[in-house]
Image (tube, rainbow, N blue to C red; front, side, top):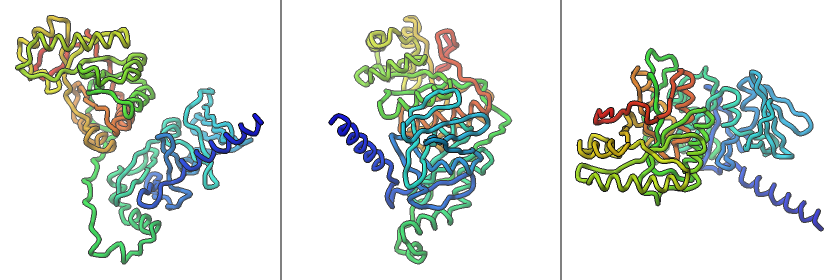
Length: 393
């Protein structure tokens, strides 16, 4: 009886996974592109999403020079001395050093689907998601391809035809004058991979309340890139998710506190709000924060307010550049920020957020910083503050 129940549960679990892995229906398409080539669109080639991760048939990576072999139900992908081994039957994945990962492969439509983020990171590839004709193009590249904006511009007809063919729309229907045309988004700027300038250093900072939907991905991206950041938390501790605050502390990031004050706020009220926030932070993590920023900039504080904060042991910081990850796509936020990086040799305090695009923006930017050799040291009490008030005490 126990064996039959166990077998039934296994069948039900497999059924749930297969349903979750079905490609999106027409009207929610995702096309695949490899470098500058758009792949044929069908239910068997369309990327899918599982557990928040993008998956593609493993053949997408073999077309980029990754070798594939299968033995006793295990798919092995290898490139440049790196290997990922996926067991579909047992649901595990590990690399050549026997490190295991939490994103297994799945069988669907007669092929094996593998996780995009893991495979790209392991084999030195990049991926991006592009918007075209109301649909999405997942593009995986090896660094030899044209920019995303040039790819969309040069392949616009092929993308439109692939979408229309899949939906069963004839060319005459797609050009009907009564069909409203979607406004085209301005092209994403090109990223200079061999810039003449680069920042001396970039302090990575995240402003606002962490959340359970975006912040775990941000922390994953920072961990994968071996980077640390400063997290400026609002002094309203009711906005803090306790488990994420503890994870930020456990992974070695710096805590800052974020005021929302103007010149009319009394110094006593500022210090009281910081003290209350630190009491909660110490209770959760055993740490306290002495780094402070003001949402409107520290130049909005009076000299008396700044004196009171500094005399109480706080140091004042402001960002010098906003990544725009809360208002733009990850690809656009990355491209515009990288352009700013390529135009300066100065130190940058980069402001990021806790939005749906922040994790991928972080991944793209830290990858660019690694390629350009741009350091991102921690903000500590020993570091000379950078703020809009030019108050370096």
